[in-house]
Length: 231
Image 1 (cartoon, rainbow, N blue to C red):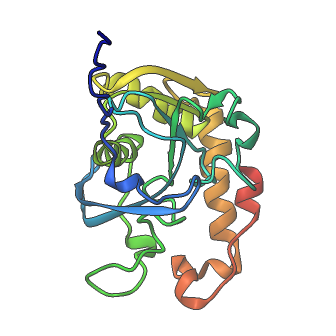
Image 2: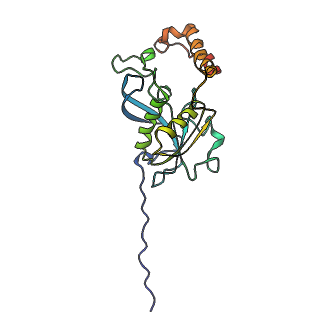
Image 3: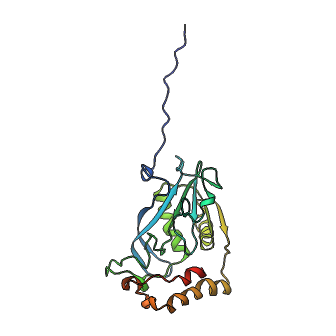
């Protein structure tokens, strides 16, 4: 008598609603709510712009968080991506198995809330009224995004200011971090680093006639490129 085969069971998996119908590298935004900032002040509503590549697994533990430098944005991969040779199928950050996420930093103005964002109290760009933020604030905002995406474990990797963010993730959010890869970054920034990457850039911007006391966006002035070259 022939054996009866048991019914074939379908294999179920959880699909994150945020990923349905999304293309790799597509620019997305997430409203992450109000933020209390480390140096005082508060953002009543903050937005982060981000892009993703690959797929998050059902456990949520295959994420790689790519963290950009001072003048970067969320385009870590694809055409024009700042780490394009490293991200993709079969590359160092292999999207066949990893879910790569890159968010424009808080204050970055490439889709995320920053000085160019309209202040809800005035309807005009924050400009110089935008509150001071820290690496800690940047990472706290990223954590909210990570949690909304359903990520339970991640590798944090970045260079320069992105490296500082990777260190921040490892030391202040170890419950989510499987590994951290800080590149060209240290635990503290010396006087030379502050002078070259901070003060010199600020002075270049403020010396530009198009600076307009920080109201350059409302005046229609072009952006200052000297500070970007120096960065």
